[in-house]
Image 1 (tube, rainbow, N blue to C red):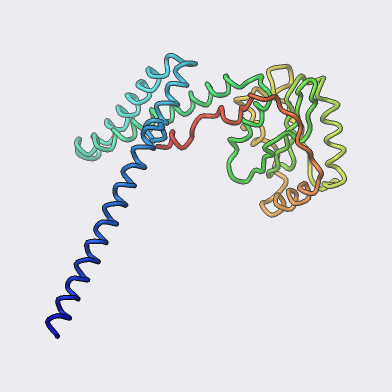
Image 2 (cartoon, rainbow, N blue to C red):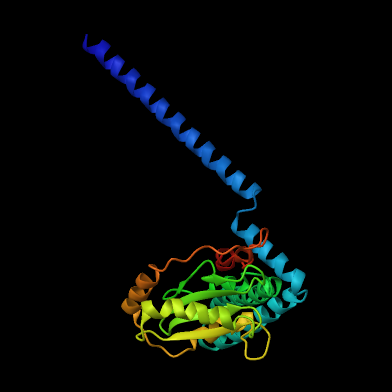
Length: 263
């Protein structure tokens, strides 16, 4: 009886082990199929980098030469400096990744410039530029005010400078729209929070799209992190409807893929 019980236990153990191996094999096959599907759909890192590069090259045909130039300069400087301090092999190993990093940063900058050139003048272009602001900024994804006839719009940004209203459209034409927006904000903000007006565009007194975020960051600081959150909480109580945006225009997706650029 003991031998029969031992035989059954061994058989059960073998069956469980076989089942476990089959499950592991199935999981590996699923993971392999998922990787193949991802690669086929062009979602890989290198595929995204290639897409960004091709998009940039269509606007800037000399992008490859700029990347090579920066890579060569970075490699030469780092290699020469480290060659006097460390062994030349170590200098070579360290210079190569820095050269590649320099080329990727160059592509990133040129890609942003190309993306801005593609969307400039289109409805929502200012929102696409504001979307590149990092932590510490609260940006409305849609206009807080918009003229459906002219498609002039006002976007709102909250940060250390206070509340920034960014206009999109001719300077004289958006004046009335900005004044109306300020009247809506004043009862909520009172006189405690400054309101800045930034005109985006290529006209006189306006800020070009590629320089928009830099201009906003340079504004005088007035709020800290907690005050920004409190201001946003107040502004969230305002009844803001969704203004009509023309179909087929989605400039928010026109920005370069930053995940791909980081590798």
